[in-house]
Image (cartoon, rainbow, N blue to C red; front, top):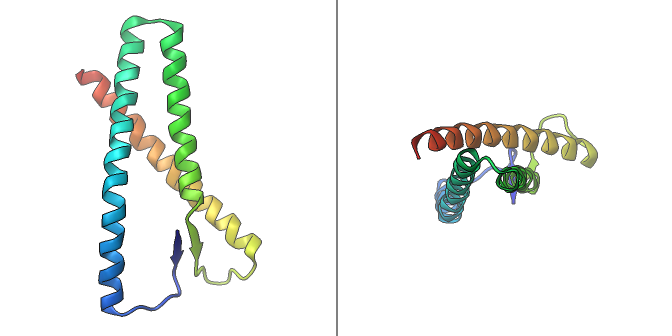
Length: 120
């Protein structure tokens, strides 16, 4: 996947890109929402049962989701940064963006899981 800030496109190309994005993103979104729901249920069950094994499953699952998002966002190639000429700098900026996006998703997942756990 590539995000290029310098590329110029026509309105038709934007429409096509917009359609492709939502056709690809919507199934992924609902897949991720399923993961969040599973995390909420695991957290709730671990809290209610109080067993170390369930807490371990919950912690490993939570970590797996966080690391998945880090890998997912790092796989997006961010191009078109002004004044960034070297590949090493581009990769560093991409890494920083992916870390920021992963952190935001982590906060989002934490809030949603916490709210769902309180409602189950």
